[in-house]
Length: 154
Image (cartoon, rainbow, N blue to C red; front, side, top):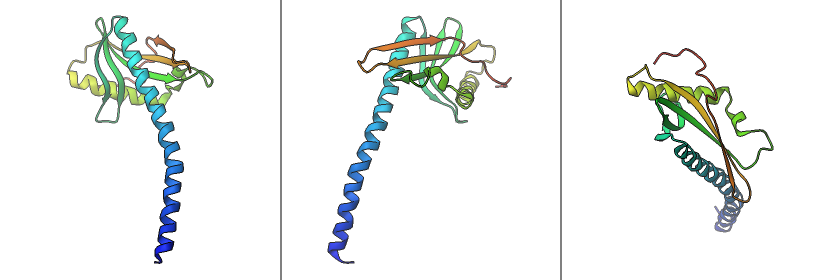
């Protein structure tokens, strides 16, 4: 291959990579940063309201996931945190669809299996975090946001 042609292809590849990968990385990292900040704000809110945080970002073997596992008095609480910049497309809670609830349920069942104690009270809460452009955040807790959809055995 001609060295001038190889250099031209390398230059084009480099320009394409710089132009598009930067956009993709920056938008994704901003989204992830907002999510991490939302989880921190949610944990702070839960602690201030008497919850004891047990674990963050639990992943079960069966593919289940829980953002925050905590205790509210004698009740084990599995919390999904939804963070948004604004509510133009509805409340963050509305993003917890059937598939997401199934994933959260699988994570909760994996956690319960680890405890070897099926006689424990538990529930599913959702914490909505709206972070406005000015940086001011609004946090809202929705207790008993949804039930365990099927009578699972653990």
